[in-house]
Length: 223
Image (tube, rainbow, N blue to C red):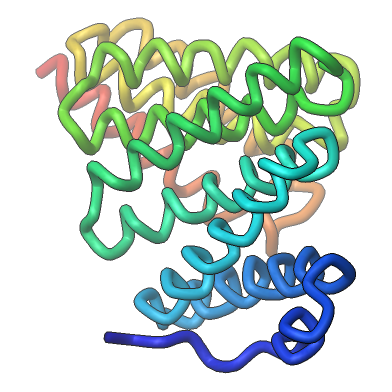
């Protein structure tokens, strides 16, 4: 079995879990992201599984304080499970994250709507991987709607997220045979990403190229 490297803070959490367990869980969550970025998926998965377990216990004792952290860990867990080919477990994790974030949005939409939009985007990916394309399409349509509202209020913060959701929406529309709607979505994506790439080519040129590839794929579907 692959084990994640030791995390600074484990001895403190063992000696005084009430004080330090949240810090350990946060460190494990961050470590899992860094391990994933370097291709060490199994180690990253072990770290996020431990973080999720800690956050689950914390959220049971104090949901107001730790449910957002549990949802974030579940979202990251879903991504890593998908990366190692455990799609069904990844889908279950993001479904739980989405459910938690829906409840948080009902209580405080200003604080948690971006997190719900992110969870819905990831849920769409997991559903598509499972072959449940219509459900995946519904999830990304909802994510796109949320991101559109967020981008209208704060374009600097959320236009990249809107473009990401629109790109995924275009792919899902193409896969269910709604090519013309997919082309409209990818044309909007390309327009946004052209502007972003002009302002910051290092950050956004690769995204623009991927959207152009999606546009070419959708065009080819009609031939």
